[in-house]
View 1 (cartoon, one colour):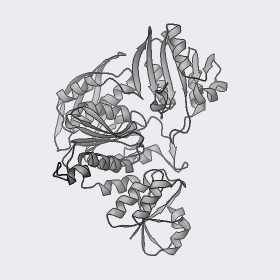
View 2 (cartoon, rainbow, N blue to C red):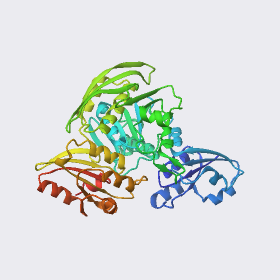
View 3 (spheres, rainbow, N blue to C red):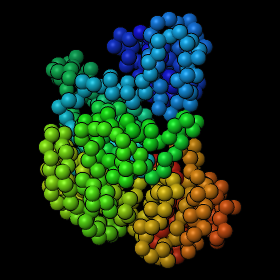
Length: 472
């Protein structure tokens, strides 16, 4: 059988090489024409043949097409290049699940997807699983924690499914350095430094997770040139052994799904398996009382009870993430004391919601490459007295596949009874669409200066990669 890997931009090179190492006959199609340098050389080393789709006419027999879930081509369009082949189709997520089928059977594994809250939830889980030296792939990098110390395996890495394999391979190299094996310092070539794994994914999961956590679908944005959408891609979460999912998301998008272990969470719906009974919000720490009923665990137990948490969760969307993480841990049969202590240690992360004090000003930062209108609404709604705050909104374009709906955002901002400070390319673009008073700063650092100089608090909402903004 021939295996055709489509899209060498979003992890296809890693997939092609992994299959070639297993002795598979592998072809590759560079969909976005980005292949160069070391990646091109590696494909050559492993005898991966680069082809154009027109060249499918040269082949006979079976053709397994491995495609990204957001591929802008239909299956029929691919088949049209040679209707006589016997086609099968696997997504990048599915093939990674197959490649890693036997990996990590003795450790707890969580895969996280959803429109918002993935990275936040990954690092909440990190605090809970810290004694198990978690291996993490997130939008902040591939990371390994050993005795609570962070080891950066790779900083600039996407959350494409192939990078789950990349993260595992990087961790293997750390644990099994060739030079130490050769010198006899390390006797085994299969050492492992982690005892748990947390993988974040933007458009579904591979299915290797003991628990798949689907946080929300606050916006069901289109993918694949409008031929599909986020909810369809994230349906892959039901490949995991156990699924933890927001109740409202399950009811709206997946009410017909059949699965032996589905656990739901909700801020308000008391028919869900886990819900909040009382929430006392605070900018530094929020108290959350939780009830859970009939939660199905990965070991076929059914558990019920109550738990009370204190953690950094200044808004309802943060609390929803906490509920999803708590349900995930209960599904893994993690002790409640570990959940409580871990979440109390969570203080937010750079690149998502953080709180700091500059001079006399409280500054709340919401810096996220995937910010959309719903997330901006939630951020503003968590501020109880907007008169005490400057609200700044801005950011960059071209940083994620999902761009922001300017009309929807502008309509919302026009309803606010407060002045808005705009900055960045996003701010400049929506300024003409606003009917209210605004101030524009080209340089976002000027927004901080304005707040500090006027002794005002600041809610800084910026659509960008935090590593770029943090260089200010």
